[in-house]
Length: 524
Image (cartoon, rainbow, N blue to C red; front, side, top):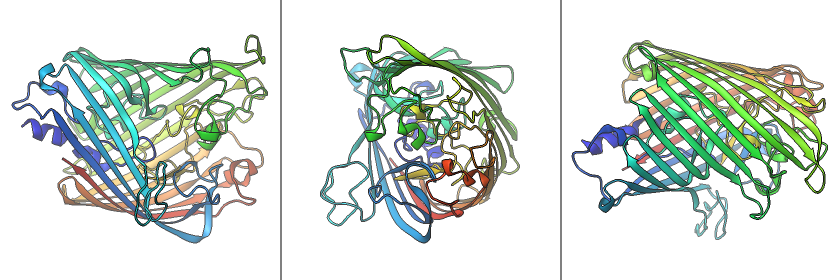
């Protein structure tokens, strides 16, 4: 029975495959399910295998970007539409190893999650992430995503130390699926990655859960005050009936002044990285700065996961505020100040009209404030996400669009038109509709979707309309935990791309399209 329980935890994983650095991952057990009838083995292996074969008119124009491509479509990653059709295959293998020594009676658990990604025919006999698919292979390309120790003084709380998930959710990602995190609390809009730190997940009562954590984003020089750190507090409680209420408070202490970061892109408000990710690059007049950024918000859900009834509704609101001070060369005196105040809201409504959870109608709406002037006037009125410091970090994906917003079913090529909910700092208003149907329950299902987005502030020389998308998908369960899928999408670009500041080409890019097949297998 215990084996069946943790096998069941993996079922939801097969409906989504998140790419780039935050990958779809297996979970090992459910600590709150009571004493098992039979203890699991001391060393467990659970794997995830995923393959994608794509045809599209989107491709990077930089020849160096043959491997991993992350960021905003038509942005600085050089992705744009071309007259030719790009065709390629990609593969991923994600093994999870869990060591639970019986001598410690479950009071300490070590987990590590690795990843191997490559494009078919790309490179051989080399060293580097996201390569190794050319003839003979021979590439050193294993990436470490998790390496953490969980200490469990009791069933009511734990302490996790080391390289771990940083999610904007009070649920422990070691024992909750990615899909759960995508559809609850803050939906990974702000934080959805991994990093080093210490966190604790706890149950104050059977109805109230929480998480407190501190994470070191960048250390830089160990003898200097030049680090970037993140503090997080998240809570959720069950109200009367089927209602859940949650709240979050986070703080980023940024004294890195843009040092470190992702390769040559750097990190922070002044870096090319945030622009690469589709966030707001404030382009401060001084590369040296210090920043204090806070987030606080509430989220509400009714009948989560259709636990009792046919309606499932949720909403969230998040405000970010703080200040940025540019510094003198010795970093001792402050210069120009930028005040930050932005708001993000989201709402979702789903109706289950049929037998399964995949017989449903789904509507989502997203709104984020924007600022057409950036930080020029000393104020930034847009949203800030973790994409300012890493990539990818804010990975909103419950909308199920494929090109307009980030798609979850990717490996080495993770891009979209609105890649960060700040939409380059201009803000965004977006609506999503999906119709799901399972004509053969638990064997065959499909979905039809539509999405549209408007920029809340106009870029210079452009309009508000970002674009609209139509998409469709069909999935067939070949065997238990083994799915085969076919997906197609077309994106019509709006007058937002009339502006030369929103595209990487001399003229407005042609409309984008994609069609791809997927094969996913959760291995036990």
